[in-house]
Length: 504
Image 1 (cartoon, rainbow, N blue to C red):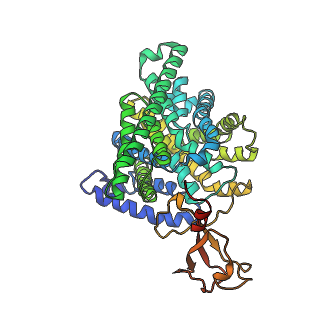
Image 2 (tube, rainbow, N blue to C red):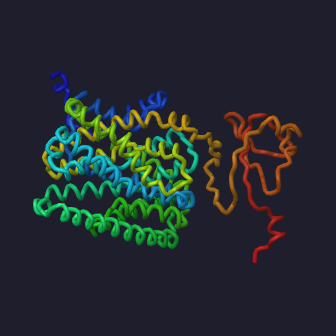
């Protein structure tokens, strides 16, 4: 009762002030949360819930606006994921990741839907009255969340063997479209009496047709827009780096919009467009462009998770804890592992411990919560209960799985310490110019002498900069090195190489 006195509509004239305060505290608490191994996205959700109607009293109940903002944020997050996807690194695991993001999502949905129908149908409200409704609940939660996977794997700097990290990022970046399509199919069937009355085979045919059109159109539009963007970026020079970032972002929105206009999957389309742009187009100052999108992604993740947290009602979610716990445990320990082991069975080079870890990274996040808004907007009976169940499962996933990824990887001996990132001092180094490496001077390096000249570096290697503590020193031959100095070196061709092998 006391909180209602301070209840404020978040969409009031003080919107910018309220948002700025939430973002400020969210970022500060993120720093504190990392010390305890808490995922940043979990903190964003919790802060939103604390600030919401059941907390300090900020009211936000516009599901339509939340869906629009969430979809906008999801497009940027997926587009950035596509831009950061290297085909060279992804190619060896593309089949595995592709199976997990399509067949894996379907198997997870089917098994979870059967479990809900047979065990928990009476606990999920009116949605559980039919098998299609149970499949809807399962479909909403069937994908791993790209924002959660990208944030935790990269934020905690978890480096995995057997290309597991690349596979997981590719899967999470490409499986949202499949979960989205399955959700839309189930919603359309449940909201159409004619489709519900068409029988099992009629519903299967309807679902298959919608799925085929969504994927075919999404892929076609993504490929066409991607290669069109490649031509545009290479033929139309722009006066500033910022304009390239804005142009590429607008191309992603265009791909999403055209696909939706043609009844295709917009998320799949923009993801493919981003991959083609990043890997096929010659983008000037690409590192600056990627930094722009990385910042945009963090902003979108923060806004989306805070918004969804504000939308939640903890007092109502307590009633959904039991079904959420049952369904969540089934997905973590049965449905997700079954889908992973089935999809990866043909690949003998993937160890069982790797499959187990991949099963554990079935992280939920903003994606499932966002997809759970569609049935609410469509007016399905019991959709509000389903939303609460999905929200609780997401919280449990981020706490149980998100906070234990590093520990699990170490126990399974799947993680390793990566070499420190090379400091380039803001310089854009083209790949054809050479490779940068960061070498730490050891005691053995100084056995032949303490000067840079005494190192006797191999042919084609030059030291560009020396970092000593917090100081950056310009190198020269008589410079005396110390153990622990960081040498930023470049490896490439010299003029002597050109004389030996002149260009044709």
